[in-house]
Image 1 (cartoon, rainbow, N blue to C red):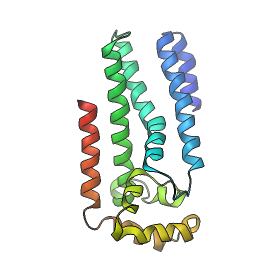
Image 2: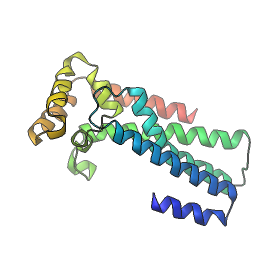
Image 3: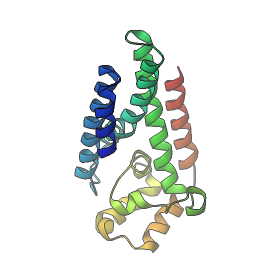
Length: 185
């Protein structure tokens, strides 16, 4: 947040539009983080609310990069700027949902960071919320309801292993691909 605020200050000397975009991004990023913190460990969190949070966090960063890139290329208004904005929002959503999926089904070695962090921190992401709707994975909701704030490594491992079974990963990847296709379109 501090870096984005500093970038906004620096951008004022470059262009009011660039500065405005950065400042708006900072506001949205903070709103998205507050939403995510408010929803921590909330099994009532809806997929729509989770998508709104990632739109405010990751979507806004991707959008800002695209819009600022367009501004730097000389686009100042109109349809081209709006296309850059929409692409950034949609691609940011696809990126974050894929990242959230990887936190559930990848390995520490491949990911380069520990897996299952979102589970441990009570961040119930779009992929997890979609998994919880599946009858064969309904037991995960019970585990999170009773032990969500104090999951053992064994419980996390059991949940992560279960998510790798069946069609969950393939269906989530198809969903991410559809989001990316929407961004490209």
